[in-house]
Image 1 (cartoon, rainbow, N blue to C red):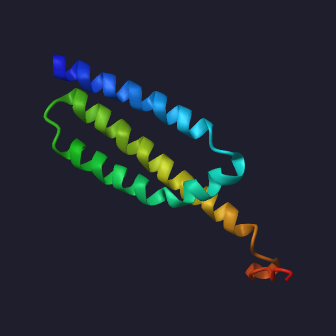
Image 2 (image 1 turned 90 degrees about the vertical axis):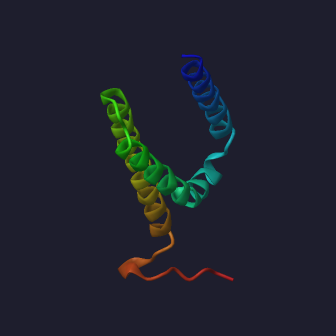
Length: 101
Protein backbone atom coordinates (compact mmCIF):
# COMPACT_ATOMS: atom_id res chain seq x y z
CA UNK A 1 0.00 0.00 0.00
CA UNK A 2 2.77 2.44 0.86
CA UNK A 3 4.50 1.62 -2.44
CA UNK A 4 1.33 2.59 -4.32
CA UNK A 5 1.15 5.89 -2.46
CA UNK A 6 4.82 6.58 -3.21
CA UNK A 7 4.30 5.84 -6.92
CA UNK A 8 1.20 8.03 -7.03
CA UNK A 9 3.12 10.84 -5.32
CA UNK A 10 5.94 10.58 -7.89
CA UNK A 11 3.40 10.62 -10.73
CA UNK A 12 1.64 13.73 -9.40
CA UNK A 13 4.92 15.56 -8.82
CA UNK A 14 6.13 14.62 -12.32
CA UNK A 15 2.88 15.95 -13.79
CA UNK A 16 3.32 19.29 -11.99
CA UNK A 17 6.97 19.57 -13.07
CA UNK A 18 6.04 18.70 -16.66
CA UNK A 19 3.36 21.37 -16.79
CA UNK A 20 5.76 23.96 -15.40
CA UNK A 21 8.54 23.08 -17.85
CA UNK A 22 6.28 23.02 -20.91
CA UNK A 23 4.52 26.25 -19.98
CA UNK A 24 7.89 28.07 -19.92
CA UNK A 25 8.79 27.07 -23.51
CA UNK A 26 8.15 29.81 -26.06
CA UNK A 27 5.86 29.09 -28.99
CA UNK A 28 8.70 29.35 -31.51
CA UNK A 29 10.65 26.58 -29.79
CA UNK A 30 7.72 24.28 -29.10
CA UNK A 31 7.49 22.71 -32.58
CA UNK A 32 11.21 21.85 -32.92
CA UNK A 33 11.22 20.43 -29.40
CA UNK A 34 8.15 18.34 -30.16
CA UNK A 35 9.80 17.10 -33.33
CA UNK A 36 12.90 16.03 -31.45
CA UNK A 37 10.89 14.36 -28.72
CA UNK A 38 9.15 11.87 -31.04
CA UNK A 39 11.84 9.28 -30.28
CA UNK A 40 11.11 9.63 -26.57
CA UNK A 41 7.40 9.12 -27.25
CA UNK A 42 8.26 5.95 -29.14
CA UNK A 43 10.18 4.61 -26.14
CA UNK A 44 7.24 5.45 -23.87
CA UNK A 45 4.89 3.61 -26.24
CA UNK A 46 7.09 0.50 -26.24
CA UNK A 47 7.29 0.62 -22.44
CA UNK A 48 3.51 0.91 -22.13
CA UNK A 49 3.05 -2.07 -24.45
CA UNK A 50 5.52 -4.18 -22.45
CA UNK A 51 3.93 -3.31 -19.10
CA UNK A 52 0.44 -3.98 -20.43
CA UNK A 53 1.55 -7.31 -21.86
CA UNK A 54 2.80 -8.43 -18.44
CA UNK A 55 -0.29 -7.27 -16.56
CA UNK A 56 -1.88 -9.71 -14.14
CA UNK A 57 -4.98 -7.78 -13.11
CA UNK A 58 -7.79 -6.12 -14.99
CA UNK A 59 -7.01 -2.69 -13.52
CA UNK A 60 -3.42 -2.84 -14.75
CA UNK A 61 -4.58 -3.90 -18.22
CA UNK A 62 -7.05 -1.00 -18.39
CA UNK A 63 -4.48 1.57 -17.21
CA UNK A 64 -1.88 0.07 -19.56
CA UNK A 65 -4.27 0.24 -22.50
CA UNK A 66 -4.98 3.87 -21.66
CA UNK A 67 -1.23 4.52 -21.55
CA UNK A 68 -0.76 2.86 -24.96
CA UNK A 69 -3.57 4.93 -26.49
CA UNK A 70 -2.31 8.22 -25.03
CA UNK A 71 1.31 7.51 -26.02
CA UNK A 72 0.19 6.67 -29.55
CA UNK A 73 -1.87 9.86 -29.86
CA UNK A 74 1.05 11.89 -28.52
CA UNK A 75 3.54 10.33 -30.92
CA UNK A 76 1.30 10.62 -34.00
CA UNK A 77 0.47 14.21 -33.05
CA UNK A 78 4.16 14.99 -32.88
CA UNK A 79 4.69 13.63 -36.38
CA UNK A 80 1.70 15.60 -37.71
CA UNK A 81 3.03 18.84 -36.23
CA UNK A 82 6.50 18.10 -37.62
CA UNK A 83 5.03 17.47 -41.05
CA UNK A 84 3.14 20.77 -40.92
CA UNK A 85 6.32 22.54 -39.87
CA UNK A 86 8.24 21.03 -42.79
CA UNK A 87 5.43 21.97 -45.21
CA UNK A 88 6.24 25.63 -44.51
CA UNK A 89 9.63 25.11 -46.15
CA UNK A 90 8.25 23.54 -49.33
CA UNK A 91 7.30 25.61 -52.32
CA UNK A 92 4.68 24.91 -54.96
CA UNK A 93 4.84 21.40 -56.37
CA UNK A 94 6.47 19.99 -53.23
CA UNK A 95 9.92 21.47 -53.95
CA UNK A 96 12.04 23.02 -51.27
CA UNK A 97 11.96 26.82 -51.19
CA UNK A 98 15.18 28.58 -51.99
CA UNK A 99 16.35 30.76 -49.14
CA UNK A 100 17.37 34.28 -50.10
CA UNK A 101 21.00 34.90 -49.28
